[in-house]
Image (cartoon, rainbow, N blue to C red; front, side):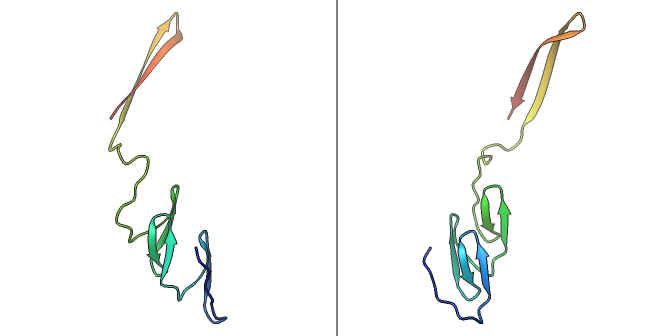
Length: 87
């Protein structure tokens, strides 16, 4: 990210992307350019703007999942189990 000159009357915000002035038009982020007036949400995957159109995460492909578990017992002791996940 490039540097910029700010006057002492500018409000300066410290972000993970560096210090910016509220008069800056855009912030360059991993997710693209966002305006300083955008609401920024911190997530597990980084900071995103509410105006971002597409957010891709490692869980994009999973819509819903159900889990089940079965156990086998002999003489009251659990000796084996199987877990299955259905997507």
